[in-house]
Image (cartoon, rainbow, N blue to C red; front, side, top):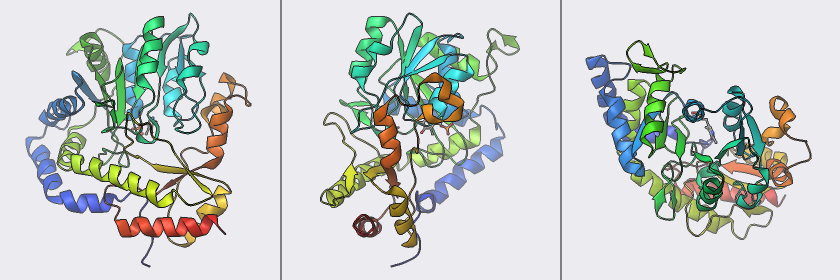
Length: 369
Ligand SMILES: *Cc1c(COP(=O)(O)O)cnc(C)c1O
């Protein structure tokens, strides 16, 4: 029994890629184009090709991608956007920042993704878009969501911050909706060494709008055609993601194997309930999240044995003070219940089977105590 495990093991990943990362960063330092250097377009080309989406626009973060996506769609004050209350706050935050109104639809209790059957009842004449979140790395019911959107003339933005690399009916996350937004926050499935993100679309007009909004609404240098932001991803971070792409396919394969292995090892552990993964898609496990009762005690017992855990997320967005005005506290019972029971275990492509066995043994003991 060795020391504490990493929750996300970025050190082993760095050790494996050290040479390429150094080489790629050195190239940027040598050419000196720190902003919008050649690595930016190179990465956008590679990511567009990977997802199958026509356009990829890199931006400063996943949050910025959501903001720019909503700005590209011309979201106006008072416009409503349907989303899930069980997500990282940024999803709802960017809607509110633009003066929009987040309208929540509860989740499916077994996947924690938005429940498509609850969406249509939330649509009003002010609804402009739907933002499903591909939580934990599993795409929501995108076909059903797209069908509702088509009936009502709405845009769909996939919040794919946790699902880059995931597949849905043979297609890739980030190429399933009007726009998709992902994050390169270090611990996401594809991460950089700081903040970064990207948005994807097959729509030429939206892609052009996003590119302009990213640089203060400029359609040409010092020609400010629209209101924008300073939302670029810097060249060094793009260089790092390019290096990480070298083993990304291997990493995704590892994540799928480790997810399946966790499932098999935990299947018979009473006191631990597992997330459902639908048959027509996979989950890249940005977090390997399970459900437990007496969570705080389980977390403490695991911590004692050097196993870090986290909670994604302890409460739904409408239970956060800043968002309380958007929904009554007793609404969305499945999101509230999930918030009380979810717990994420160590997960990364470099997690060894021995480490995983150690997590499972400690968890089995902790829940039976
Ligand atoms: C991480 C995350 C974001 C925000 O991404 P940043 O790059 O940290 O800004 C948005 N939505 C979800 C679901 C996330 O997990």
